[in-house]
Amino acid sequence: MAKIDVTQEIVGLNGEPIRQGRALCGRCGKAVMACPNCDGDTPVAMEALTLQEVCRFALANTLPGDDKLAGDTKFEHFHLALRIVDNNEVELKAEEISTIKERIGKVWSTMVMGRAWEMLDPT
Image 1: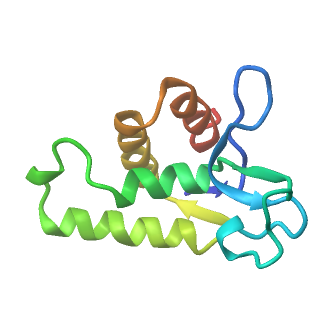
Image 2: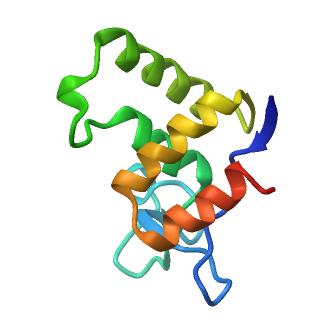
């Protein structure tokens, strides 16, 4: 079993965090849609992409070929995604890491995949 810190940020070749979809209020840090103080003049920051989000997306979404997976396998992916989302550190078995890596490789860019794989299997 390996203990993985899933809060690690995915960084680009320049060492800067890769930013993703959700805009955060520059004043309070809340999602812009949920912030009553946000207006057109409020500075906005994009949320950094984390290993947690990369894993969640890869496990919780339907990928090419998933129509052939048994319901039990999809249910295992669902519960693995819940464990990752509900914790900042997750103990993962070698088989779970292999599943996550396989799914990340199918859905994410080469850059995100490479960084995520390094974090999941640092040896």
